[in-house]
Image (cartoon, rainbow, N blue to C red; front, side, top):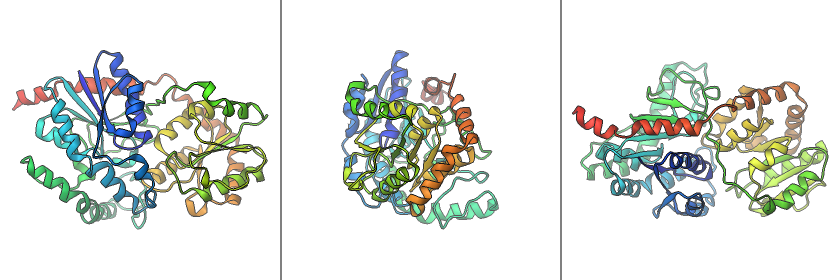
Amino acid sequence: MKALLIPLGSHGDVHPLIGVGLELRSRGHEVTVISNVYFETLVRSQGLDFIGLQSFRELSEFFQHPDIFHPTRGWKITGRWATLDPMREVYETIARLYVPGETVVMAAYSAFGARIAQEHLGVPLATVVLEPDKLRSLHQTALMPRPLVLDDWVPQLAKRWQLGILDRFFIDRFVGPATNAFRAELGLPPVRRFLAEWCLSPDRVIGFFPEWFAPYQPDWPPQTVLTGFPLWDPDFAPEDFREVFEFLDSGDDPPIVFAPGTPMQHAHHFFSAASESCAALGRRGMLLTKYPQQLPTRLPAGVQHFSYVPFQAVLPRAAALVYHGGISSIGRVLATGIPQVLMPMAYNQPDDARRLKRLGVADVLPPNQFRGPRLTRVLGRLLDSQQVAARCRQLAGKFGGCHPVGQISDLLETLQGTDLRRSRMK
């Protein structure tokens, strides 16, 4: 089998598919990762083939945009960067590599070029859904930015009306013209409701999260399968993080880790609140950012800045994690079994934060409430709660005996040859 894996996004999007690629390669399959050129070194260091999408603007340019984490404006920036810009090149790359009966594609739900290749060429396609909010439901509806009101008490008819307006007057108007123009070049008819229906492959939709995190909904596509969090991170050399381990070993109490996201460059108030909270609680803290200009001028005793620390190295020795709520980080911290405080900003983050709070392992502080005194109270309550600690251990135990990467690979192997089977049925 020739597997083409197409993650379109940041590290949290790319790492899980690298893990799947390594599993597929161990089974004897050919694997090629197609993504932002930024990830070429990482992917090739794992022994996987790589094709860089030149239409993808540099990751640093994308994350420098001041509105990238805005709750209502950020989606347009992401939509153009990860959907419209690479659409044609994704399609053409698949078309060049496609071998009927041998090739299988697994791509992000935003990879419109892969979905068009499926329609036009018959390529077997599995759509990757990293976060539950990408699967629409009128039952347990995902949390979305205001003015949408989609809580459980809202009648389904009212939810349908609101989501219809969102699709028709916002999403479809944004992605529709360019997408349908490209489809017309290939002789394909126009489509609508791009994110609500069309972008999900009719062959297979794979949710990279477990059912206990987001239960199946009656109106999800029937071809949807949930696997669990496919945790993968590159190996690290302990000697490269000597200062980190010296800090961890230097105190009796485990530190609180603060991480607003690897690309975040506008988190001054986040780190200010973190420093203030550590001082008030008398706890050690680790402030993680590659952009130290966001940090307070002076840090309290026991609080130290690090540019980068692998989560798999530090979280097992941490008291809690305070972060933005990236989906790959969610899986890692749940597996570790420590409490969390989330400052969700945009995209899937508010919905995932609400799910974690309902699971009893986290609390949530929106950006406008993320201040030192409030954070101090929330952290103190979580760290002192035996009930929260027990719930964290209970959920961490659910990771034992699970092999999401293997299950995802099994699902891809079942797709091989579906293009030929479809042709025989016609």
